[in-house]
Length: 300
Image 1 (cartoon, one colour):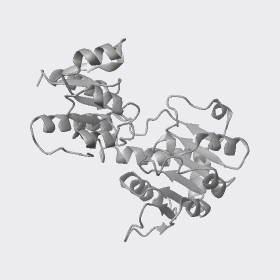
Image 2: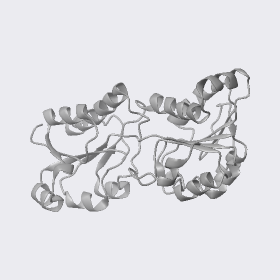
Image 3: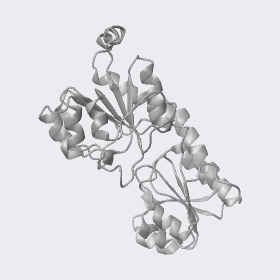
């Protein structure tokens, strides 16, 4: 399959890059100084795009590549891909679910512990049985894994989802504001869509309150970042643990001086084992597509 052109949008994983190089005619888009010239030159040979949570494929790029057949994302989120355009043109889209669920859930709990400060104090706090109510926005794979871990600390679990989940045993709230009002820690774990963009706004943060903690391991645009900065600096929000930001890699400078925040560079799934499994899924989807077999993790 060396004649198949694959466009890798940005550096993301050396194992994935090396394996793609072995199997396909790999183009590294970030190394092209004149991207428009490159696209014009290779528009008839590129049949696949590999992107990630930061860089996907917009409508213009898709239109510029008339032979494009599949976009394989090295992430669960596909919000950087124009799915409507893909459906319109019959382009298949895949992602990497499940293999990163456990690591992302682990990090969410790690951020909670980090925000509660010194581990010895946290240990005494947990042993005292005074753990807080944890509210989770989105009870999908990752949200459910976070809930399972939080239960291990005897935390009561509340959640908001598009629909109430039968037989989960957690308290359901029909709005995010009600969830925030009844939670001490609010964890964002839903997919990024037009409906969930800024799902955590000023009203939600005020409902969470001055003692509340906000955790985001979803996507940066889930939170109205400007309102979050105001809430933290004005003391209307107790703290925040953030693995993602609205305009990555930019991080609001106001956060750097705050003692009640923990900031991470989008590393929730960044273990060697998980990133390797994600890379294997990307390659498995490409191989399945070009072999005419069912996709492993089809989105579109």
